[in-house]
Length: 80
Image (cartoon, rainbow, N blue to C red; front, side):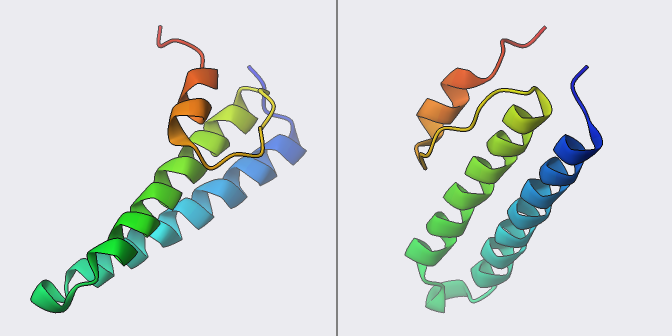
């Protein structure tokens, strides 16, 4: 399984950044009716993107310069 020390460091960085986007989205939702939905959606999209990029690094798959979740998801290996 891929997982050199450098790759593991990069995976941890992506996951940490994704976790922060998730925390921000969750915290923003607590605003109730005052909640800016576009901000929550933006952080949620970034969160998913970063988790996928972490998986791509872990699987030693190159990272394209894109923010398109569908493009990133297509690079993931099939579930076994």
